[in-house]
Length: 166
Ligand code: AR6
Image (cartoon, rainbow, N blue to C red; front, side):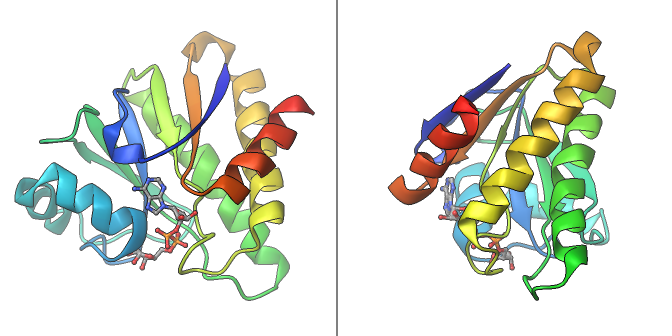
């Protein structure tokens, strides 16, 4: 099942929220900064032990002071206009969902990965995100995964409404 909301992902009560991180996994601005701020310093300490993350891959930590039990850290592509951008963005969604399933989680919330500092055009990113999630849910019905697509700004929320209606 896919739900959409507009708001702050750090407030969501789910098994895992996804962080749009960078390769270092040592924090940053945007949603990454908000998640580390809300989770507290123990999150950074656990992230240090992960030794970074490749673009398109995902790693899991606990959620610490967040209402979410876990954080799945994924690294979106820095938008360059090449076709690998789309493949890597799709991989972020698929790998995060598979990691959630492997950890027996049943609810996950995603921010609009790569559409802030990393410059991915929001409309194309929304299309890729929804196609990836829909494909994964179709292929993994036994996971009983509840997916929340969290838009921060109203423009992204409107794109998500259109994608959900498709
Ligand atoms: N809840 C939900 N979405 C949010 C929140 C929030 N609290 N805050 C921002 N967004 P960005 P990226 C939205 O830049 O493009 C960091 O420095 C935001 O409006 O956070 O993947 C990392 O360390 C946008 O729609 O992530 C990396 O260096 C979306 O989250 C780099 O930025 C993604 O914007 C990653 O860039």
